[in-house]
Length: 353
Image (cartoon, rainbow, N blue to C red; front, side, top):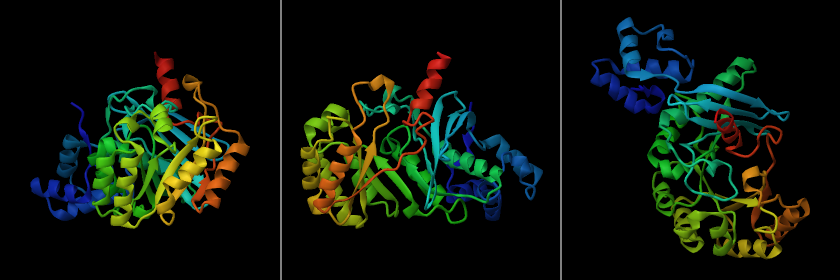
């Protein structure tokens, strides 16, 4: 039976575990430091612990549940990782370089059941949720990679936008957020973390109540129900008007900005009338709504979609701006290395098949 990754435990849970096993509280603090400050790979590297304590840890936990299968480095500094889990499933993680710091995009599920028709992540259906430890380990593996470069760089930002629907794995994702935000651990600021959902309305409402200052992004991708239902199956059970009601409640409770992700698909959702509809949809949220227009990375299995022409993206952007909607055209990363989320994993699995 596979042991639990110790990265799944919050610091409070680790303290409780040590106390349950007759150990002093400060032992948990020592182990936490070894895991997140020194980033050791084995328990026997924890030199200030007794042999008995190390054996207890080794019997109960593993450290990292991930193994590097493929690492691709882009000319722009983006690094894409394909990790193999203990059960041989594969997941993707991406390191991106921005002028404001280093950002990591993490995966939360093996596969995805949301069924967005333009997305490479959903080509392989959900096999299982990731544990909190498997999500945390993605950050640790990337930080170790940076450590080995010797440039004194650190992961400063995290986006939960990789393979899977984070709110379909809500409890594990929440634990992950608490762990990476811990001031004595990786200390990634809550305002430097963004969680993206395709629109699970009950979980958006729950997320509004948890008190974390984490950013929320919603994968909207359409300005009306007809278009959104045609490209995102989730819209059947979570239609736009109900989604916007949940967004209004979230904004009222948190007063925090929401980013609306909008992937630009030629002649599907990129017409001037769509831009005007989107502006009207967000009109009462202007102060706290931010639209991220995303150039589409074509996926061979979804050849019915093409990237919007640059002039159409700019025209869409101009209409939103003139209507007072804050928006940006997202800078692309890693276009020379299987850019679309899920592409690398899908390609590798086909090779093995």
